[in-house]
Image 1 (cartoon, rainbow, N blue to C red):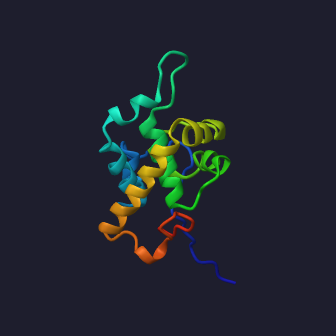
Image 2: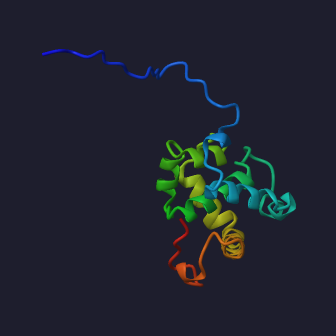
Length: 150
């Protein structure tokens, strides 16, 4: 039996060279970019009344808002699942700046500290997504019970 020359493309798992901007690894039409841009437009003053100061430093409210809103667009609703995905899901890793809040921090942020604000921001984001053609109005119920975005 005659053997032909076999060639393989080289690869290495060590010393990888990544782009200097991790956002370049995320497709431009990924919802992470939309969430990032939307949250960055929110003035910091919107978040400040929810903090009293003192104590240990908190996770940045824009970062926490980004990961929660993005997770919702990906049908991730449980704090433990979001925390797990922060370890492996590149868009979430980028939105969090590679920080890894645990599920308790995620749940406290959205249910205690920012409950009303997160709900309002999510509704506003859905409205913007519909207006920009990312989402069809038929894809979700107005009360937020079912949301199908991507």
